[in-house]
Amino acid sequence: MGAGGVNMSGVQAMVVAQYKRPIAVHLPFRFGAADGARDFVRTLREQLTMADSAPDGKADPLVNLGVTCAGLRALGVDPGVVAALDLMYQRGPDAARLGDVPGTASDPAHWWDGQFATDDIHCVVHLYVRESAGVDPAVEHVRSLAAQHGVEELRPRANGEPLMAQALGGRKVHFGYRDGISQPEIAWDDAPDTLTRVNFRRFLLGHATDEFRSQPGEGPAAEFVRDSFYGVFRWLYQDVAGFNRYLQVNGPSLSADNGEELLAAKMMGRWRDGTPLALADAPGGAFAEANDFDYSGDPDGRRCPFSSHIRIVNPRDDALDPVVGKVPRVIRRGMPYGPELTGTTDDGQDRGLMGVFLCADITEQIYKLTGWINRNDFRPRDAGDPHAQDPIAGNRGESGAALDFVVPTADGNQGLPGLTDFVRTKGTAFLLYPSASTLGRILDP
Figure 1 (tube, rainbow, N blue to C red):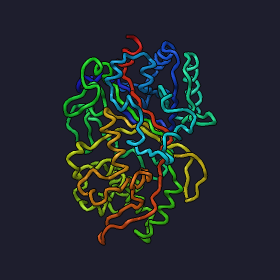
Figure 2 (figure 1 turned 90 degrees about the horizontal axis):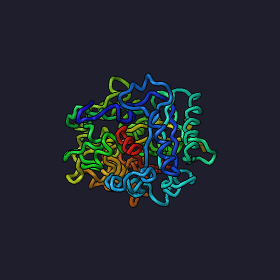
Figure 3 (figure 1 turned 30 degrees about the vertical axis):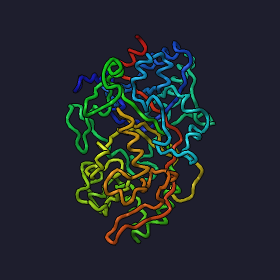
Figure 4 (figure 1 turned 135 degrees about the horizontal axis):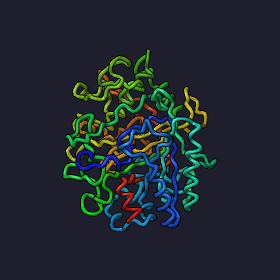
């Protein structure tokens, strides 16, 4: 039993551990009759990977399950309980708040490669395996269970292939950066937040306080979802060739020697080996895994630009506008998909990231971040550049979005033109990852 009465045996393990499995498969389904849907979930319940286990030592596959609000209704959950859940979860993905601007390539009209609508999704089953040989048996097992119980698999690809992600090696993602460094550590001891540790109430439901709010906040509905958590599943395409062209064109204006690498570092806020710009003027050395740092030594952004990705999604000690509230923190569980690409010529292959962003409050932890990514207007210093965006993840179709990446220098701000949509959304689903007790209330009322 953890702090605040958390029963770790009842918490799905993905919120606690980054699985050491290089392959992930994400299978969306639509339920049929309620009895069949419950039987499908009841069978999966016995196979879920929970937080009291040691995932590294478990046999493949590791399994997790997320359910949409429509899925809860299809399972026959009490409408009063459903109505008490996070309103954003109930409504499902809001394109405007996610920055998936209608009329752009991220428009939800294009999601799931047009094979089905987001509202059709009732659950997503996540499978994690060590080797390629383990993929087909794991997938076919779940597909067989679904067929037995009248549950329809939704196939986002026209060729029927599942959504599968696979590590590139070296903990890299497609833009060449080392990933997984800045994940927050969960403070299960209920300690206050620090730069690197975040209170567990920011992630688990049924433990809300005045300081750490989540919905449902109290009463029978809060008990119903106790130790569950919300997750936002995202399928994101990355334009690697376009990103590399941007570095090639603009990098030399920053440095004649290592301009492309310097620009990549300025855009992320870390060198591609993970070394924070706030700590080092070059990659390598002792800081490649550093996460316990702030921006007190860089108040003008000359080392790490204000619009760099990591300074937006975690501004640390930067002064925020009073109305902003807390810096949102999420847990990311993701992996690249598609073949690697080097150079500036697109090969037409689909590649990017698939993963889940875990939280207890979608508005405060997800929509706040996506808002900051698409409009850097959350700090007093942003008043002079209110249309700046995250240079990597911003949607340039946002009204008034600046197409220059601004790099502060000793001689003033340098604008690097030509930003495009380097990341495009291909699908999003809002999920509840039910605890063992929540599943018991759903399946054995």
